[in-house]
Image (cartoon, rainbow, N blue to C red; front, side, top):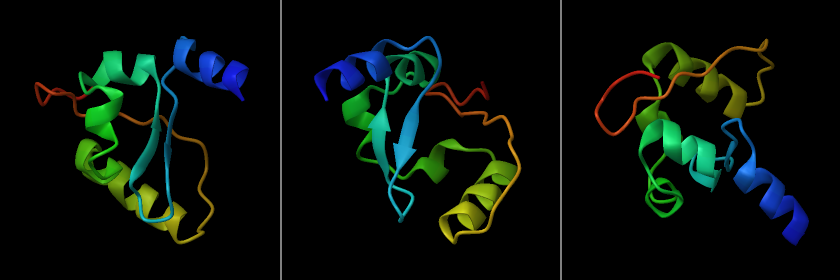
Amino acid sequence: ARELRTLVNTANAPIFGVDVNGNINEWNDKTAEITGFSRDEALEIPLTTLLEPRVKDIMDKALLGVETSNFEIEFENRSHEIR
């Protein structure tokens, strides 16, 4: 388990996870770099607060079990820029 944690944290791609309610439960270093939110900060907020409206709709459907095609997620960072 420790090796997996290291792999996720040091990946050169953003990796994040959410629970069935859309609350963030995983947030790696690259995601923190892109968004400006530390892992501890991110674990206290719902993912949808950081997503553009189009992606919020897709996320809501995914949480209901509706299958979606692959898509690129853009985050709103701490400075309110979309990245």
